[in-house]
Image (tube, rainbow, N blue to C red; front, side):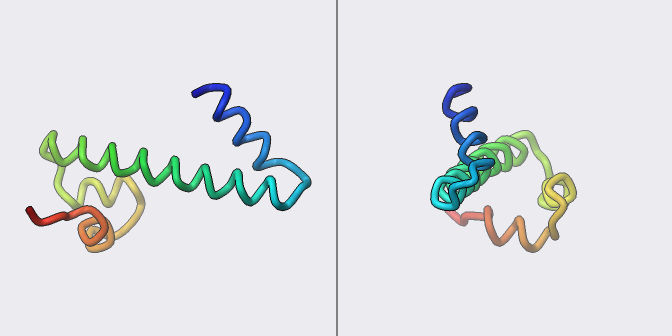
Length: 71
């Protein structure tokens, strides 16, 4: 993954707008996946929605709406 991340970071600093924008979108998708993994992990460890929201710097309502999936 290190090489892939290096390539993304290189693309993000490119002077070619097409390359830069593709890299930014790929980094956004990576961030979204990592956030979901860590929110799930936090909930499994007993964190409240408020605790998760505070760690992410968003409102409790925002994180609850985004990740609370009723089963």
